[in-house]
Length: 397
Image (tube, rainbow, N blue to C red):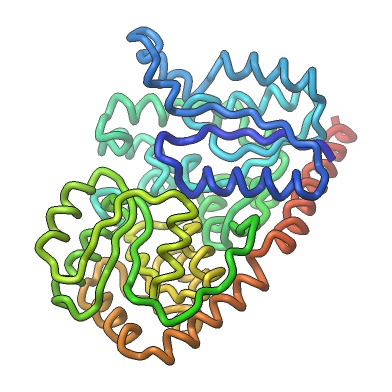
């Protein structure tokens, strides 16, 4: 089976980029011809004023990406096209190009972009479901995308236009949700339930379990409000140096985090780490802290922690409450509650036996659900499902 992988990479590499690379590696190592079509947001840095002005329209209908994909499809003739991120330089309009070429489309739903202009289902540091529950235009009222009502209106307008023309029902054979929670949420937002499969994130290569008990707690992720970094800092103010913490990542709250950490005993900022250095930091951690206050997709940091045998202390919210087993692979706490987070961190720090047991259960979960072997079976099932769906559609035409 020849596979076309399609992805718009971010300026700062994140979990979606890692999954795209992992799936490319997974397929190539098992002998599949893989063709990758990628755009990068770094391209925007070279845009002139007129091209920058057209960027919001491109997020709905990227005409140059359509032309490039049409040429690539005619030349390479893949059996299936697997999309990851299309925003903003590829756009959902690319699905139609694949349909016209007779290539079935799979779209992994890494976030909530198809239900929310900001893609996060969060606003002002809390969960917000106004757009899927009521209307996309609620996001315009609040200026949810980049704090701009105009920019949000363009993104919402593009989503509304594709909904009206049937893009998401007609041009995509199979969607891939990362968890059952994500699947249910996106079904509630209008995606066809019979076209959504569930396949979790995974690691292409097993880093192996850590040795020792770990010397610190670790936060590994984007430094932004929805990731709960303010809750994290408040919790460690309460701990007052009792639990050493390392914070790895970058983002809009980086200056605030660095300033706060300078006044907190035992807290160290590591800055952004590449994947290998991130794994190295995980291997040295007693536990991973994921204090998110939004509906995460499926953080790669959790999969990596499990692979390293590191337990997870995280918020009881959305998909996190599904993938982290409370008192099994980690500890769940109320989102946005620094007292609960501090208490959980203190307990797991002081109880080495509990940390070891939960780390071992995390490693067992990795071996059962998140290995390359298990996910190869799942992704092949998704591709076969897409091919069958396309054949059925042709038979009914």
